[in-house]
Structure formats: C-alpha cells, structure tokens
Length: 216
Image (cartoon, rainbow, N blue to C red):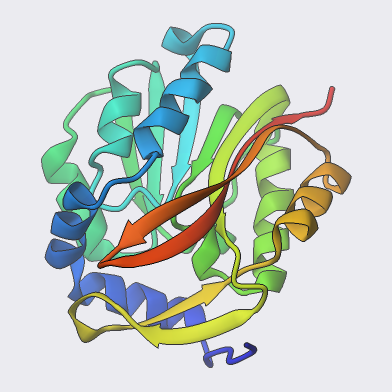
C-alpha cells in the first residue's frame, strides 16, 4: 500500500518525541530477538572488546545500547528523537558511549570508521528510496569485512498508521527476496536472513532480521 506521508521523517521524529516514555515501556515489555541478534554480532566480531559500533535508532538506550556498551570499546547511539536521546543519556552513562540526535540520513562519518553498524526497528521508518540510501551510507561507514545487524519491515510498500499512544507513524518495506537481493548487490554478504515473527499487542508482525558483512 503506497501512502507516503509528506515529510515522513519529521512525522516519525515528532511521534517518537510524544510517545517516548510509552515506547520505552512497550519496548521493555514486548518480546523481541533484539539481544539474540546483538549477541550473534558480538560473536562474529574478531575482537568485540576493541570494536567501534554505530547504532542507528538507539531509542532510550535500553536494552540495545546498554548491552553493546558493556562489550565494545566505543558505541555511538543515534536517534532522530530528542526525547529518546534524553532518556538514553539517563540510562547509559558509560564513558565509552556517546549519543547524537540526528536524522540518520544527515549523518556524515569517515569512510571505514566502524567495525559494525546496528539498525533495529529504525531503518524501516524510512521511505523505500531512503532505506537504500542509508544502506549505501552504512556500507561506506563500515570497515572492509565490517558487520551490519538490522531488521526490516516486510510490508512491500509504504504506509501510515496509528501506533503507540495514538501517534501517527510511517513504515516502509520490501519483500524478503527484494531486500536480500538489494543487500547483496549493495556490497554485503548476507550471513543470516531470517523472517522472525514479533507479537505486537496481540498481532503477528513479521520482520526480516539480517546479519551482513561487507565484502572485502
């Protein structure tokens, strides 16, 4: 269903600002394979304790950023929502972790700066076109042989809906094989590409969870 919102990124920012506390509670009480996939990432990193990690869509910093900060030497958490960043600063005070409030499309890092990039429940809020742009950026930010962990919506289009706290939200997605093909043609070796069902408020929602590695 193609129902792109005008300035969808601004809508996502404002909605996450308004529902920051509710979203945190929802995140902590909704089962997700998030930590399982982050653990898998750490196992693949040659030296996790000295790795530099970028997390796109860090939210309130728990559980993802907090988990990464305990195992990696440098973690940068990014979120479009200032309210989410404020919560993250409260929850994660590790000196090896910093937070940036920014639209991920506006980020500018050095080529090959990171050992791994994480994008969980975040890239799927971009338009389909912008998702491809962000994946190109991620490939550039990763070192040769660097890793990406993320999940993607399988809506096969772009849609608006009402979500937590009655806030409007935007999602974009491809079909599984479209995503896997785009990742491979974009310079990633797909090590894992699994469709995993989340149960959100009694509804089954499928996501494509990916562990990828940049080709050397």
